[in-house]
Length: 290
Ligand SMILES: Nc1ncnc2c1ncn2[C@@H]1O[C@H](COP(=O)(O)OP(=O)(O)OP(=O)(O)O)[C@@H](O)[C@H]1O
Image (cartoon, rainbow, N blue to C red; front, side, top):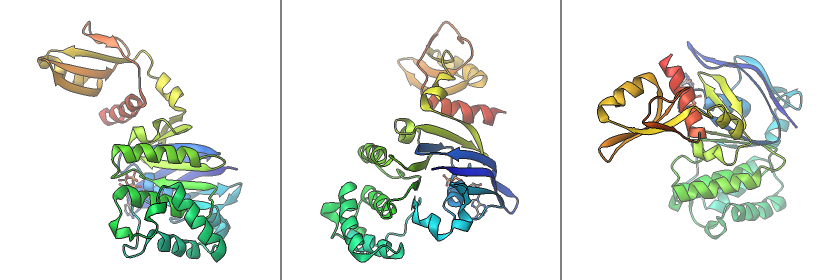
């Protein structure tokens, strides 16, 4: 199974939201990371066949998804950023409604609705109206509806926005469980959402793929380049002008700084273990500086 994106572009008037993007995706979890506005949603909407590209194409197992039409929608699950949740519907009624829209047979729908509500831990809330749900419950319902057709390609756009840390952790576990035999694409600007569950990270910037690889490989690119130290407050500006500062905070009369540099910046610094957050900030900071 593969999803092949070739030279994909989307132009909105004079704005190029996606710009000549090519990638091949196989079974596994992909974390699509990038700051707000880099083109993630536009890319995802094209992957779902909701938006048509200005140029290029997307193929599922060598067939253009636009030509596949309904057959592609049958294998696709999509959790959009904002979902129209029908506040007066109960969770079960909403799921049955989506199952009908997806054309699933009624007897099969009834059974899988209960199973899926269980999977996302909403079984007890199945007869509660959606307007009474917390943000996390709505997100979980969004995932459950996307799974109704047992999709081969599952796409989630900013799925953890508005969730608290506990809900985020629960969500990560759930995605890991779902990833077998599927292509799962998870778009986010939050590194920790994908750090532990993605087989591959795709950094997107200005409508293009800036960098990609496994978490481990990406982190390794910064080995020996991440430093942390405590410096006098008057020197903070000097370091932030010269280096990519990942983190800084004032503590105990001095300022703690974590930065990226090819060589040890001064005797006040010691080498630190790189993280994916460092990679993210380095990519976006370096480019901004240019
Ligand atoms: N329908 C549209 N018409 C004009 N410009 C658009 C349209 N949709 C998106 N854009 C622009 O294209 C760029 C990419 O937007 P997109 O929503 O894809 O980014 P994103 O990475 O998903 O950001 P976010 O996380 O904020 O949704 C932005 O500059 C945005 O303003």
